[in-house]
Image (cartoon, rainbow, N blue to C red; front, side, top):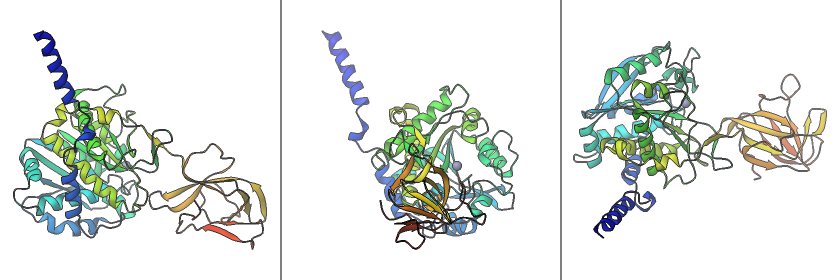
Length: 428
Ligand SMILES: [Zn+2]
């Protein structure tokens, strides 16, 4: 009898431990949203800010005695790369952003978090906890030369995130040396991604997470396992705001990439990829949700949940799947100058998928099975495509398109798409 009782008590205890988290508020979500809203730094309202602008905006914050700014070295073009740190705890956390120059969302979030660290009142419970238990080292904008041109690579054309093994670039060397000098226990690798879906046919991904593999076999050693728990804590706290829009990034081992190598160097690293939220072309809402992700991660590490949290929320994330194209225009007849009309569908990519600007042709022809974020049907209409200087259109060429009722150039205009602005064509 008593044996049975013990068993059922154990069962009850385990039930409580595994109670669905949806029922309770994930830790720090509300506090973090408050931080994001109250301490949002003005002056970073577009994603295409540059190095000088960023550090000018951060200047008053960096003067706080709670914050330390350390020069780490210079980019290829001589821009000083800086670490900004706070806290004096035993556990070290390294977060770096914008190693890809055109991926700036989290760089804005780091500024907001630093603003909160600098200006929040004495006795702020979350901040005190983080300062006591952690030493947090942030490197916003690891690739300032790329950021200057809003380009992925550094000024020599090297993708810094494919330079972890060789560390041929000063930017990669700076990150590796910093990791080694602070013996980072945890790492957060902050990126932006393009158009992806959460699983097959799922919604557009707003944020994708990954505990990168440390080897070809994608084994779960203790270092990667801790990263998985941190990723799970992040997934829990984002779930209420991003239902169906969270995904797990592809975990194929990338021998040259930083996230993967950080794991092998002993730093439990989580990748956060900010994707796309409809209606958020400058990613200001994603900036806000990154504050939630980062503060939940820090809270999870500070409270030891990185050793104890369930991995269920991370494991249950749908796969982050590439979507081939941003836009399909199906069912039309193509006219190029005096050529055509012929029956042809168009697949279009945007240079900037979030802002939907800079359209270029992906593919032209029979695209009945193609997958895109958006599809427009133009059955019975004529696609008057303006040719390039060679008198043709082709994949990769800029889209200048007028959709008309008839094959004649003067027939009634339905809608048009210009290369420079690339506005969303209105009929949906
Ligand atoms: Zn990236």
